Length: 121
Image 1 (spheres, rainbow, N blue to C red):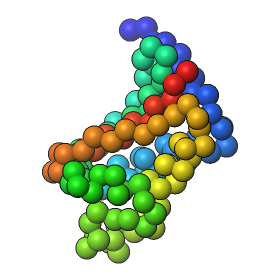
Image 2: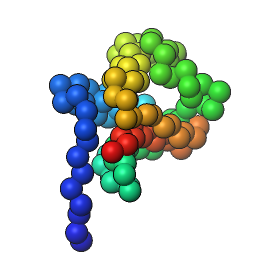
Image 3: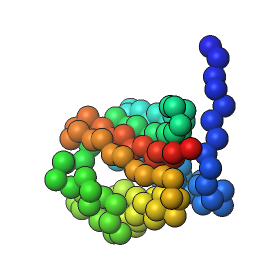
Image 4: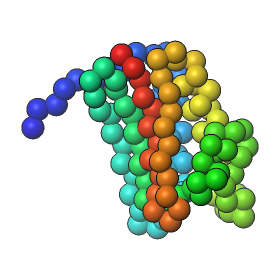
C-alpha cells in the first residue's frame, strides 16, 4: 500500500491542541470497549483530520452548541467525566485562526461522532 505524504499548513504551536482535544472528547464520551479512529487524509486540494468514535453521539438539535464554551450535552455525567467543557470551543477557536480551515461534525445518537477539521491547500 502506497501512502501519500500529507502536510497541514497552519500555526504549529497550536495545531497539536486540535488533535489532543478531539481525541480527549472521543475517549471521554465513548462507550465501554468503544473505538476511536484518527485519520489524516489528502483529498484533492484539501487535507482532512478526522476523529471518529463509537460513543454516545450528540442529538441533532445540540450539535452546533457543542462548540460553545462550557456547553455539555450530558450534564448529569459532568462530574464523573471531568473536564471543563472547553475542548471543542478551543478547537473551534484554533480552526478560526486558520483562514484555510473549517470544522465538520457528523453524529448519531447512540452510534458515535465524527469530527473533521478540513484544511484547504
